[in-house]
Length: 329
Image (tube, rainbow, N blue to C red; front, side, top):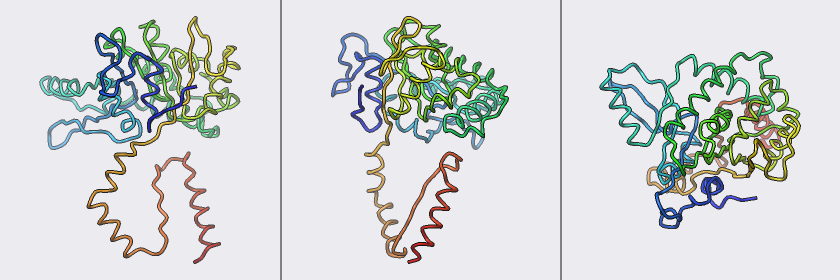
């Protein structure tokens, strides 16, 4: 099984989707002919459309996916397809200018209504898949009616990809919000090279079988040529679910499905270490560090977390309280 050679694992993933697209040291494709493109598909674009001071602008987005895939998008020569955020009503000329600006950045927006965002993203992706995949079964609603919106939005993403894909392109689809897109795109482009990477855990088959739409989600993911995970445990859970839910017979890192071979891989995504090192070495940061060291107590404990129930913050606060009780000094 391939192991990542880079901080993010991105290069290895793209190489496994399409080995001929592996870049040479100078950044040029190793294969002769026209350069191959990598199309990145994620829930959000790496830029957000914002309205301020009576004008509309495009600002960079922050987040793990946007940061981890920035270099792939810059070097891959293809589109990044995703939701741009809520776009305000604009006159035709202003909207045309906005679309041109996004196109110049190789960003293809998938426009969603407020109701679609609420039902697809908040209702099903974050209301059903997120807690289930994080083993928070008690948070999964007994009756979710938002799967139809989830399916509709996934189809919009597949249609957007189909509108720009060209022969030779590698398509890299990301995360649980778009689990149905690989199979939907496969119907539109049977010969496409499609990869899917899951940025969150894949639960054990016993937990996954709680999901009413488990078969459709598995079929969706198996539309890819390569399905990637952070750890081998997640890969094993996925393979076991394919066996127990769909009756397939996976091998160690692959399975035959619909007359195709679907491979599985482990690609732990890290951080842009060089970028963070450069930030830490800036003069204003070093000056602030010195101020803290001069005026701070002997020990500093720092935590930076999202306020999400899967992060275990309440338990960590209790652990910190216990630490102070047992080590008052």
